[in-house]
Length: 181
Image (cartoon, rainbow, N blue to C red):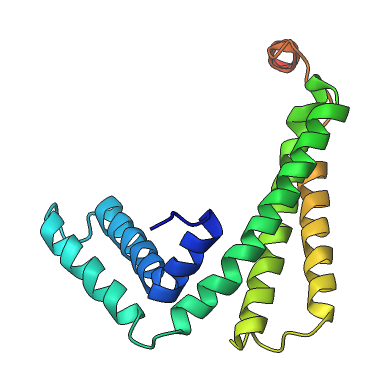
């Protein structure tokens, strides 16, 4: 029997439910187990964590396509968002001087937060989950909020140059105190 192309293999995996059941099951299991193991919520009893993670993973697949539909909408958007963020990161690395790049971390974090919020809103909208009146204007409000937070962070972190002599103010105070006595 001839070996098919990679596309044939991926289509056969899709037909047997790898993407709809196995991968969402593994993802939910890994997240639940990782959170339980990191928080040590039930002590250091790993078999209990495995049982709880298995139970939650299996229950998440109970309504067959709810979790898989959400994940199938979320991860393609996440891939696009990561590609955009990577492109911006590459452009910052190419066109911004190395000593100025440290300040761009805040901007990149703001862009990443904006991308994450847009991805979440679009995914919830596409899957029919209600997010309190999501409209097309919501994206503009999100962008305005992220820009406002970015400006606040930029202004608060860009203070004037600090004096290298930290004892200067203390010395003046000491001299003034001695003169007043």
